[in-house]
Structure formats: C-alpha cells, structure tokens
Image 1 (cartoon, rainbow, N blue to C red):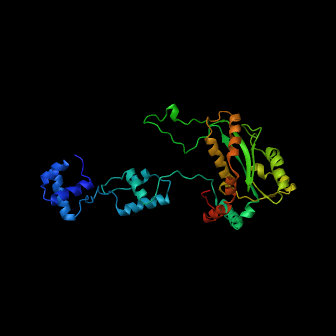
Image 2: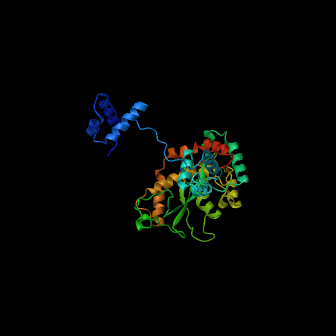
Length: 345
C-alpha cells in the first residue's frame, strides 16, 4: 500500500479536524485505518505530520575508532579501506566491513581518487627546484616573453588514455569491442621537437632516422642537425635578446651541443632536473594530444600519425601558447609553496 504524501497527510488531518471519522478518512485515501490513527497520534504529540526522525541502524564504530580510521589514512593515503577495516574491531565484536571504513572516510572529506604521477624527487632535486623558483619569482611577463621553451615528445599510434571508460554489460569485460588493445614492445611511434614563446611557435620537427636499439634514439648529433642548425640558430639570429630553454636530457648537455650554442651566442636558461611541471610546453603537448585523440579514424601507420600530428599542431592557437607562457610566475609560486615538491602543473 503506497505511503501518503505530505499533501495527503495535511488533507487527512483537515478532514479529521472537520469531524470525519478515521474510518471515513481511510476510505477516502485508500489506506489502512491504522495509518490514520498513527498519523493523528503523531500530530497530537508533535504538532506536525512529518515523519519522526529514526535512529537508524546502530553504528558499529565508536567516535574514537572513526578518528583512528581517518588519521591512519591521512598518514598512509595509499592504504586501502579493506586493509584498514581488517584492523578495526567494531562494537559487534567483529572486523568492520570495507564499506563501513569507506563511509567513515567520505564523511571526513576523503575521496578515493587516482594518484597524480610525477618524477622521483630527492632532497637535492627539491632544493634545486626551490632555489630556481625563488630566483625567477620576480621575473615579470616581459622577461618571460623573451624565453623560448622547448622539449621533445613521443607520440604512439596506439596511445591509450588511462582515463578512458567503456560502457558494457556484466560479463563483457573481455569482449573484443570492450578491450583497449596496445603493444607492449615495438609499437610504432614518432618523436618530435617543438618550442613556444610569446607569439612564437617553432615546429613540429619530426626526428628522422630513429629506430629500436642503442644509438637509434635522439642523439646529440641528430639534435644539432635536425633542430639547432635549421630552427634554433636562425630564430636567435632574428631574436638576439631571447633566452633558450631546454631540459637536462643527454643530447642537450653534451659538450658538442653546449659549444655550438656558446659559439652562436645563444643564452641558455639553467634548468633544474626533473622539472617538467615548470615547463609550459608540457601543457602544449597535452593540448596536442587532446587534438590527436579526436582524430577519427585513428592513425594506423607512422605516416598517418605524422600527418595527424602536423594537422593537430596547426589547430593550437597563439593565444593558447601565450597563456601558457604567462603562467610562469604562478608555476614558480607553486614550486615555492610546495617547498620544491610536486605541483599541479
């Protein structure tokens, strides 16, 4: 038998106050007579027709245990709710369930989320990052506008985004159309170089002659022949007051590379190790990957991927790259706030 709505309860009380019998009211609303009697009793006691608050199921944890569950996950955020539940004996003299531990954590504001990924930062790395950020915090946008940020990125044909979701029925986890296939070894890919600055975008430069095995990656000679000579040196001949930024990858730090940049009069910005979050071109790379993910059908060969990358590169506006360059002050402040640790960038 359906419950009476709030409006029906009010009407029932009105009929009773008008002199109707409980039997007549029950017949009018097609409910049991005991429902009307309980409604009248509740109205006489509380003055309201709303449901009385119920105590609910008794809690199996004490407030002290609730604090223990919360503090243990604050101290050890990678421990699971199931592990914590096995160590807590509830008031029913048995270990609490995983769902109970999860509810206690959610009530305290903790959520089960994917962890952010970042490089392994030692004390030396954190100190170097902090020192660099403090030294560049007072740079204004005009100085940052004269910096050319660069980096290499690898793009694969079968790139799988870890955030991909699939709608499927129970039991279809391993159906062919519900599995993201990828090759663990030898998957076709390409390596490209690019650079951005205020109102400036260089690239993309697709490295040629790369392949599997030692010595077939981006070497210092390939870096000089395919990037520095044809692109970087002509740019700085036209923009002599700019500063060049590249990270501490081996092709960038060899003596031959450094000598070439020094002979060409190019000022190179010192860069702390393991600091991709401080380089705005990393977000430019994310924008490029977002555009590639929208390509339908997906590239199936390296040549298709090459064309898709070049096409996606042209869709990213100068306004987007300028916004990334203007974020450098916020990046420095974020590193200082994190005491040289990981940042949201």
